[in-house]
Length: 212
Image: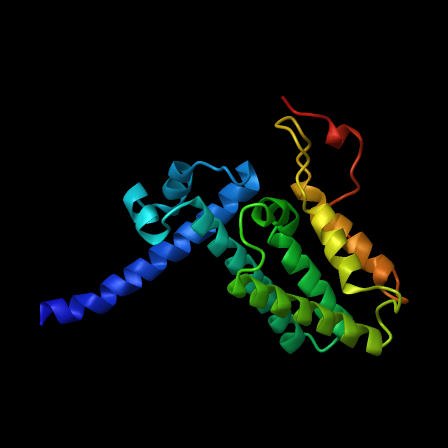
């Protein structure tokens, strides 16, 4: 009787551990790159090394799962924006900001070098992500709110560039400025509107000085 009752809880614990490991790995890969220490990932996830290796046999398997998780989250952001925002440009803007928060600019290069691009799961996930992005753009363009000369590739390149960390340990910390600059981009993509209120404040050159 006790064994039967314990089994579902054990499965739930294993599912939570796996999710924590993937979330911690995503953060570590953004910060350190594809060679982020697995010990550090386990520490951030609050699990032991044995638990990490029990769920993910090697680094490549973990990176594969992080890739899927990031794309699934971006697709979920797109569906939520489309369903909850009656204004098509507001839906598009919400999606852009949410996708940028996933730090695709930091993750895409390192993940693309470490996984099989022809893996069926990844091919399907990329196709779904492409479709939802194009759907949001098409809807906003059809409503006359988004420039007609903008394609999904333009948007992805802009997001990737704005969320890509600069090389080197002494580089500037641009994270506080990403949403501000994305809002400037979105204002430029809109067909006609008054400038929106930018998050944060105007950045001075003093703000960009390297900090020891």
